[in-house]
Amino acid sequence: MNDTPEKAKHYNWDKVPLETLNSDIDRRLITGTNMMIAHVYIKKGGIVPMHSHHNEQLTYIISGALRFLLGEDQDEEVIVRAGEVLTIPPFLPHSAEALEDTLDVDVFNPPREDWLDGSDAYIRTGVSQ
Image (cartoon, rainbow, N blue to C red; front, side, top):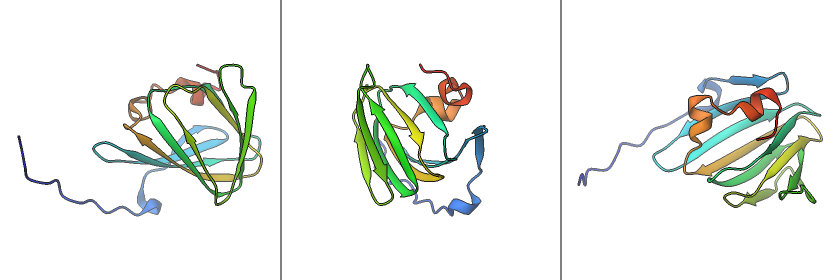
């Protein structure tokens, strides 16, 4: 067992590479050992198709607003606006639509492997998982 702590890392969001996922969604990722944080930029009308994952998710809206549909039947609607946070437990199906140009900060535990390896086809193609 290694008792030596890892070194802290400092980031500037403007210097983190911007990844274009589709014509409406871009993101920047920072990953630690057990957590991931992302800036997700969604143009008004942009859609994140229904999906679920084993990761716990916190979504904090910096600017704009997202309409989330939750559950297998997408029958629960929650609108999250600037200054608000939505917690999404593991395995809960969810989708989102940007009601305005939106910057959201997503935090995941553990980090999203599909976001790191590029296998997140649902968001790139617009097709639900």
